[in-house]
Length: 638
Image 1 (cartoon, helix red, strand yellow):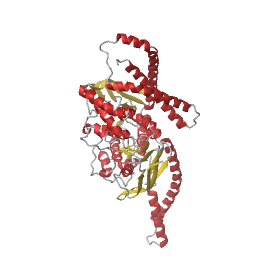
Image 2 (tube, rainbow, N blue to C red):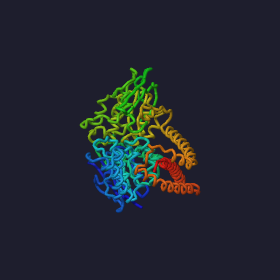
Image 3 (cartoon, rainbow, N blue to C red):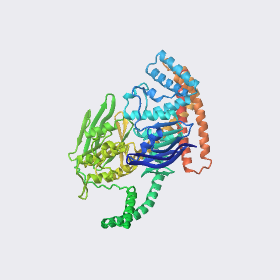
Image 4 (tube, rainbow, N blue to C red):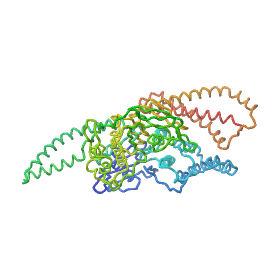
């Protein structure tokens, strides 16, 4: 079933053509990613689909009876709205009932007065009338997973990351048939990204998205659209398949390119030697040369970065943190943290949003001071700090002027010098772009330019705070190759798991309350270990639960005799929850049996088997959690 059709779409800004006659469609159940270099027109294409921009020609058609939701890269809200109003703006009766319940619940938890208890009871009756408890559970899961609380808070008080999560929660709550998203993983911590992946797969959401998160592309996407040189290429597979088939295409085109380049070289030599008096024959060859030159201009091979920079010398002492403590009010970031950095270390910083990752980097660079303890920096250390805030670029300057303001050249390991124009070319700023004004750059191009100003300072200790945000895949590969060749120390904060796995050989995990765990290995290895630990904990919990169930009758008799006068009674919310748990458990047990039967039915499709296995594991875990909760509630006085 076709949800979206794009036919013969053209778009240009002045002399810059973004795409030329592109066509594609999205079927129900497809999860399609759009990838391209920064400035190639990805966000413009999404704006056209949303109606925020107009194509020069072509047609965009959505199926008449479907709901479509859009997630913008920089979502806009009415600053006077509360989080509640921003989330629940639909006229849907079920959504109205759930929003009223969420607000009443929050008020009752803050102030359990009789009036608020009554308000909560009325809201529960509304949810019951709409038979919306399952929907409420889903909404609760979304808000909890994206760390969205305090629904009466004003949107104006939220940070940029909080607004992005709010916008993401809103489009998920809407449950559209087609979801179009621009960089959905930006501002999400690693746990949230993994949850979002599972959410899309579990709910079979139809998607069109722009993202540079390569694990996300690999785990979620069924198709990839590549916008390159104004044309659109479709790859029916995930990121791994895309890389393989793109390499095949470029190899095949490369052979044609080499033949054309040899012809171009001969033609260029001939034109330079051509006599001034042009005959009809020579003019025809010049015209042919001009056409060939024009066709080759859009087909230059991407240059790979191989920068062996002459790094500033590192002495014996690099960086020492001794008993470092830092907190904001009651929130502790570090408690007596100790670490001595060694030459060539590559450390990734991980932790939930708000755990203090950026504060940790600011302490190292001296932008913030510890409450106690000592941070000693070696005399030879030259920091290169790429921060989330970035720098304010002068809009009236040209790209090459920004780089020249930092330095005239970068010294190379072989004694040569790399000029600003050469560095810019290596980072996808070709000569024709180097004299472009900063004001005309896209968001990703600005980030790329800022990154170059950091690298131009020839640091020997690089600190990168979310460097992958808004960078295209080509630039990411270029940056990764540079960092792999970099001989100095490297600390990075990134939500890009692929980037972290490739570059970090150990992790600092900020677990909260000032606790920092040191893990030797990659991020994926850390997550696998955490999953194993959780599995063991769940097994222990399940074993203890079985013992509890065996003794239920005896325990109930004892509890009835020995209930103390201060035993807590169920709240209205808990009573509704208790009544629904038996139905939920029965339904989940049925679902588990069906999934187990499917696993044993002889299915040979690897992806289908994998999806069933994931779903079976999630269902089993959910049953365990609900059974444990049922036992907890059954202990309360009715």
